[in-house]
Image (cartoon, rainbow, N blue to C red):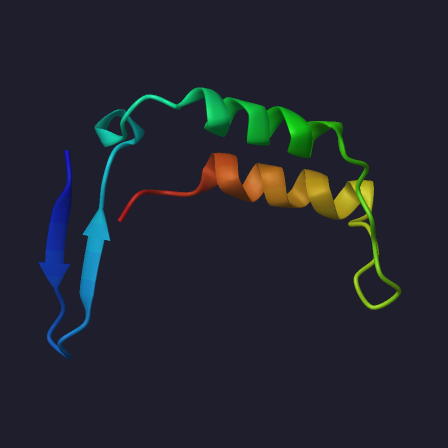
Length: 67
């Protein structure tokens, strides 16, 4: 279900469920598969996230509450 809320300052926030999206096309699936096959590349100013930090992020996502 898609819904839009207008905040007191005038900002509009729209939320939707993934089930509201149309099915993926063959082109979409091909793009996703091509992206999955590419290696991850990191720049010096954007190194990989350490395993401990990744675990902490995943735990925070699991613990979050929906507002």
